[in-house]
Amino acid sequence: MKRIIIILLAAVLMLCMVACGGNGETNETGEMSKEELLAVAIELNIAKMREDVDSNKSKASLYTGNVYLVTAYIAEIETDYVSLDYSGSHVINIRAYLPTDVLINLTEGSRITIVGEMGKYDVEEKSIASGTYPYPYFEMRNVYFVNDIFEITGVADVDDYETFPNLASHEMNRFFRLIGNDGITYYVECALYEIGDGNVIIAEKTINSGESITITGRQYVHKTEIVTGYHGNVPIVSTEYIQAFKDVTLVE
Image (spheres, rainbow, N blue to C red):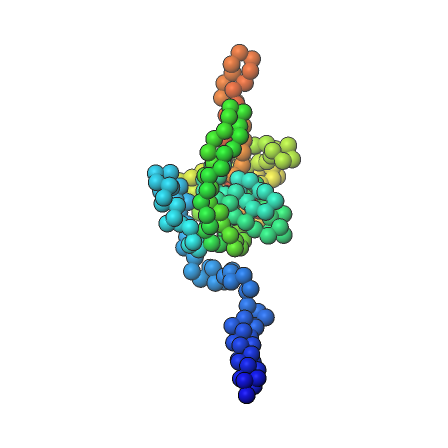
């Protein structure tokens, strides 16, 4: 009789284990899927997060454990994560861990949107020529890529074009200016042959200077160096970051 009871108990235990974890589609790590993350994500205000933590380190606990939708620029790409900042000034404060097949298609300076879970806050020491400095950062885990196409509306300024060196190819990229409705001047990358006398051609449509347009494209921070003066014969170079767009489509 005792043997029968033991066998029955074993059978019940096996059934319980199957009920709890036997579904092959279950995420064994317990992590949320991309769709589940997007359903509950809060849009992160990175500027406020930095302000909170800079003023009081204990406020980092207000952010850890939450699910966030983050839109920011890629400051650095490492073997298993990207470092993000919100302004393109390359002040790094979020490390987002992404799969390798996603990382290899990203570019430094590009603006992207991701979703994921905010992990620990930590500070490490970074070395520079003059010594070391504290480098605070948050980790984001269970991260998914969401988007790298953005939309902007503004007034075209195409009376002239700007040229800035492409630091990767050492060629000159050409841009026309778009004065955004948000007050920011954006530089829209285009080929020289697309620019006429006071107009520019986008997708075979002529855009005149002063015309209000809406475009979509890949947004990025373009690093450029400008000579601001000379110290004797040595140029004084200032590094500036401009807000730029490429792969642009005109929204009708």
